[in-house]
Image (cartoon, rainbow, N blue to C red; front, side, top):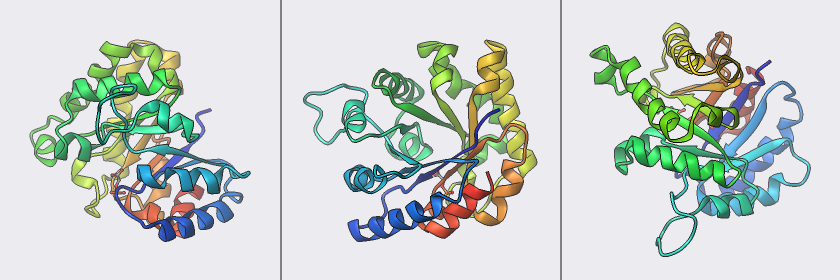
Length: 250
Ligand code: PGA
């Protein structure tokens, strides 16, 4: 009923040559993945190359890692949703924990990025997740609820029909420390139940990805959980074979 999605978040990695090789590898292997929808989110500057390589008959979508809240104008250094659409992006990541913590994006900024993404026909992949100290203080649900509420209050529950949520516990990102399938499932169920209070059909349809040190070796048991509908993959998405094996686990 919910088609699994595995999206690669390359972060700020890769030369043009590296990206070319990686995209060729993914392109070639993606045909053998039927079940799972596949997407890659390269750095902005590699999106034209990505569009070029993947537009020719591949079943892999692509997206941005961020976008600006404005549509166009005097915003030096920024990239708009319209520009991403112009290069064929389907998805855009919003509110990644690195954007929140390193670049100071608060819940309101993330919510307006989510809104502007949809206004441009992009599917936002909304990242939520708690810090280690928040988990230790038993604040996980409070933090995740606050991050979701900012979007729900601005955009409404209907917006979740054209969105993806990624639960990424910050302590698991790039650390090699994956949440256990049970820990992840508990938060995914919390997210879905929270949405269910507003609209059970929409809650049942929204894809909730897990992110944080997913590898081919741990993907299957994570993705087997009832409310885990795929993954947002950082480090492991830089290796075509590893990434495709994660896709096959979906
Ligand atoms: P990781 O990153 O897979 O390298 O932990 C995940 C992410 O940041 O989306």
